[in-house]
Image (cartoon, rainbow, N blue to C red; front, side, top):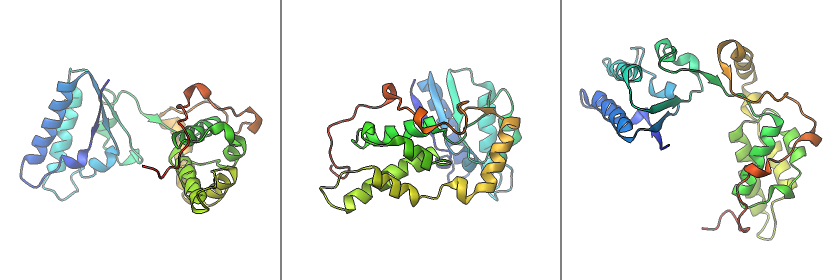
Length: 238
């Protein structure tokens, strides 16, 4: 189905009543495209002033109320999903059943998932994942998020490029990039540990049931899920 990304920040405008009108227009557009998926990214940022403490004369509250009413009464096939980094900052009325049917907690990638993520991004940048020792990199990236794994590959490509045109990306560049990366699970260890500890008590777990530690020998590349590796070229070519 079509995926519509709803940027709540663009709803708000300077003229009185325009923000509310923009919200109604956006929701009508989603209904017109239906059946579709309406994706609200970083929803807690867009609804930051919905508790009435934003100093905007109640505009955020009225916009939020319009969204709540629509989620309650809409009969069009619009499947609404939202992502949030800090769900505790969301109003409770948004989270109740009937508006969002379920809340999922997405944990840090397991070893097998990290292997798949690294393989996907290597293939995306025209490298064959089978040319790399993914097992050792998976072991070294314990606690890395998917975005951090992507940046590991990108940083390694920069490292290889800086060493000369004839230098191919190899395991050494990936290992160097990993050693220079400090994941959020390290820099914000206490906060993330508390979040993971409470997750099972508050939300459904969306992540794999795979154990936290898997022997490197058992890590395999999900070959059927990899994108086709195009003819090799340097990442910086246009």
